[in-house]
Length: 318
Image (cartoon, rainbow, N blue to C red; front, side, top):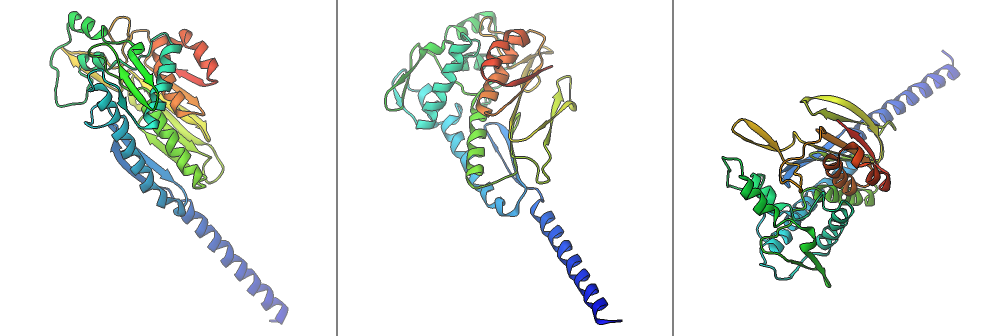
């Protein structure tokens, strides 16, 4: 065998070794790495696709813990708990809490109170309060009307220096229809600041994808069939987007064999009944998507058209 032939064989072997090594390293870098926890009564799962990004997962979970301590209304000592239990006195809150309450009030105003930040008392009357008290009977009309008397977003007063005050005896706020969206946005903001290119943030029905898959393809996000949540009714291909779903199947109470879901109509005090079982919003902002998914479920497909156009968001009704 001549020298030239030997050299060619050696070069081919070296090139093959390099290709195998690159493929191995790319595969190693693209292997999904996840972190999870339980916050806001929700299973939280975070996935990155590059080993060097795994070091950021713990910080993300610490952020979730911090936001729970600010925004949970059932956790004693949180900003929201403090405001709700101040007896009408002004309370100093974290700037982020103040900002989120301010944004929530904007949605209340835009929908003429179809969504209302002060729905907490009505939620509690129905037994959706996630505490140790378990209600065994459906609330009476008298209880519902009494709770409705305390629902009025205009009772939330924004003061200077991040101070919040509640007017009206018994008024309590609940950020349940917007908080997870805000938190998902903040987690994305943090990961992007660390130059993370591909990741999935999942907070229950709130999903945010960063970039696209490591191979350049879009993510596939499945939408649950509201009539059989074990099935997928539609799959959406997205990259660098928020996908938020609100459904009547997510939370409910059952009294005398009848199920009552947690999306409440502020006009009647009862669960919304308009034929819509779930709404999925695709948007750039998860905060907006979270709010819009609930708003659209309350208003119905025709009633939600104007606000969807305003926020340039896609909606899927089922």
